[in-house]
Length: 189
Image (cartoon, rainbow, N blue to C red; front, side, top):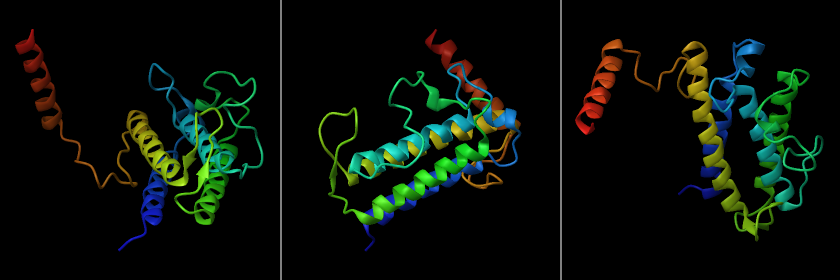
């Protein structure tokens, strides 16, 4: 039988790894450029999750993450956690993310799943189990965003370099999907 905490940590770490490899081999411009109308970009996703790891596994359980104040505190510009300023280096943001993850792992190791904490700005108490589950979901969600953004940048897809866990690019398949969409739209009117 497996340990539920270990299971959750495996899924969280997998998503963390996916997120970071999405930056590999890209230029400064490509890791920062917005590729959706809302400005989604790869380095901004890492910056956002660094703050989330620090908040949820740090302050929530009375184990503040040292360093830069969290993005949700003070007079921070709205959505400042979702993009990197020109003076913020990739190395600093990735380093902060790695440190926040290590700090989070220390909290996870030190506390039982039923440990109670309080997330600043959220109503009521929470547990490490709930926070860990939330961060697995949030990190996986943003890893999915990163997958789409990276595909738009240079075509790289999947959970691992080489895209071994996704179907190969097939123009005929893409054409079938497009035809089905058009036929369904015509049928509905």
